[in-house]
Image 1 (tube, one colour):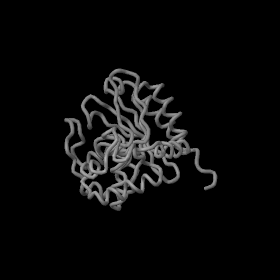
Image 2 (cartoon, helix red, strand yellow; image 1 turned 90 degrees about the vertical axis):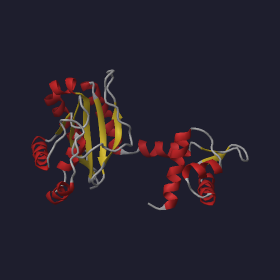
Image 3 (cartoon, one colour; image 1 turned 90 degrees about the horizontal axis):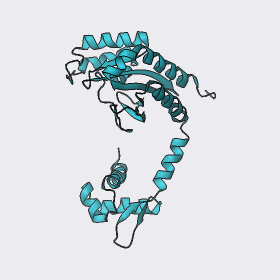
Image 4 (tube, helix red, strand yellow; image 1 turned 180 degrees about the vertical axis):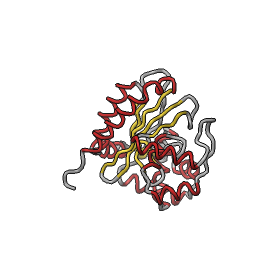
Length: 248
């Protein structure tokens, strides 16, 4: 990533973290970049309407321009629009947290998160990445969608560290889990990432991109309904995948 792009993104993340107007010298110090470079970034953002200066030397603060642009983009994302309605319904039906992640290579980022209404529930921040490829159901679903060559390359170098006593302990065992997941269409994490938490995930594709739907909750609640929950997740993935772009 170019330095100017990184500094621009760092600048917005700094305002979100500090939640107050910041002067050029404060931004320069907090981000560890030269004042001249900081000035260039701030000047460009101010000229484009992304920042405003409260008063001369009174500090800078973001305008609503970034929010409005992000809102417009989100409102016109077809898969997210459809997924939001469907995944909320799945959350309501199961009363467990339901998540949507998009894969990018050997990583996946959560795009939507709908929490259970129950006091004890899983909470995942939108924008965060999956915790592990081998110890989460979303990670296993991603691995299960790799072609044989890519999977072999991953398994050759994978280091399977134990997160809990239940974490998969060997590459052979992991491959067996992935083979089983492919056959049934969904993947399970039984307390491999966090003790007391069970998750299940299934993949679907939209415009050549891989997405992962996950249901997560306490093992005591998930385990008794795992077969039913899995079928509902598979049906959700089928619904989301079958609405392909008619122009293709």
